[in-house]
Length: 259
Image 1 (spheres, rainbow, N blue to C red):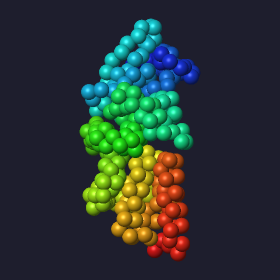
Image 2: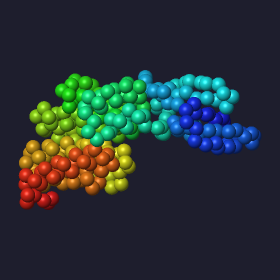
Image 3: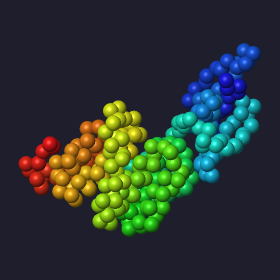
Image 4: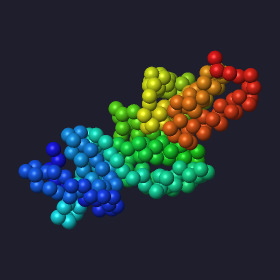
């Protein structure tokens, strides 16, 4: 049972009366950022960042005092927070790698390790932007950071698929295939993926399709691209990329179909 309440320092959307122990009422203002701990405790406040395995949260108590304290990431069940404007800007159509890097570098520095879908999405997109500008060492370091900070979670699939894509571009086709095959196999067993899982699977299937193209296994490559379009379409950018790859493959092979 949560004994107490917290008031967000930023936007306030409404007021909820909570029944406390001994029937003493308290007023809780619903916050933009909310953390649900594994023990059931719900905390609302401003998430300021993550580092060293902890999330820093700032709250305003019912008495008006401001408090800032860390919460161990291992104690967190889920997080709800507003996506920063910089992340939204990086998703804009036509955003250049330089613009993506400028928008996402500070966000990744501030929030890397936070168990939130958008953070891993930002790290993956940042790594891709680094790679596009020829900074392979920065891209690999970012993927390795995902592997380290999110070990034991599905988020590591994003890093594995990204590293596989780098291997493919470097001509290491077999290494790329070995990396994505376990993700593809897991995805094929997931008949109802969550939006976050679907986005993670999509990247793996795109790399898988490109590997199959390199191996002249064209029907299988086309099937991989179409799988992203029909099943793992949760990330619009990846779905568009799959559509382009499928159309290009078909234009070069007019009689091609899925076996």
